[in-house]
Length: 315
Ligand code: COA
Image (cartoon, rainbow, N blue to C red):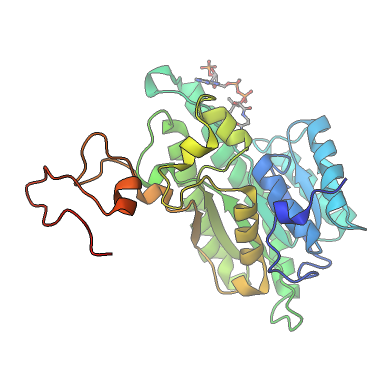
């Protein structure tokens, strides 16, 4: 049974905006990347997803193909992004069987929770290799196809696009997150690779951007990183928009960047986190028992602040 589209993409997008287009996705069997892919397939694209597990990748590919009658989705398992030759072969197979690579989502990543004291040099290196080298290998394997697609779609009058790459990053490294030294270093590098592609391949018509999700509910990432004692409601309470993100939030951002609406967006980081990263650290004007955002909604701040002017806001 196909998943209802409202669960993974909003209904503001026109059907067929990705007709005949092909997306190549590393980490495509994961929760976020599969939703991004499902949205593109629903709106007309065919897809090739890459993963380490043969069984999981092929099963998810089959399921993604249910997003649109007639959709073609290939699952290439046994492909580790740390192996450049495997990726080259996967890209060749995608182009041979589906006709092109118009879009790339570089989503494969590794993560676990560990303090620096519990992280060996090899543990750090492993995540750097998956995220950074894996991302670089993905760029190298697919960029020739993206350049061709950008050339084919130059000045396209029908609203169809091609020649776009999107990297899935994170927000930890904007401030800092304990127990994520390896991931912070890796994602900062991913953002930097994105910028290099933007300036080196922009002249060929290729666009290169990052989507930076915050905590996204019911994802493998959150399950790996968050305590099972913390539920979505509690986790969302400190986020300015009052909730965790959904896979649909990330899929919509992806559709935007790959669509005709994203033509001039290049070298950009699109943060989709409800402003979570902007609200870390201590608050001002607060007593120990005052919780965000309750005091704001009540128009209160501490009576014990020396420079406080009024008890209540006038709103
Ligand atoms: N804490 C500290 N170190 C850890 C760890 C943890 N929780 N998990 C793995 N490591 C270390 C290992 O101890 C090893 O280092 P060592 O040889 O010095 O002991 C190193 O990382 C490599 O581990 P290994 O299991 O051989 O790597 P792998 O290539 O098989 O797996 C991982 C890669 C570690 C990233 C694994 O978690 C993984 O496969 N993740 C993929 C899925 C994923 O992370 N998704 C997240 C999406 S947000």
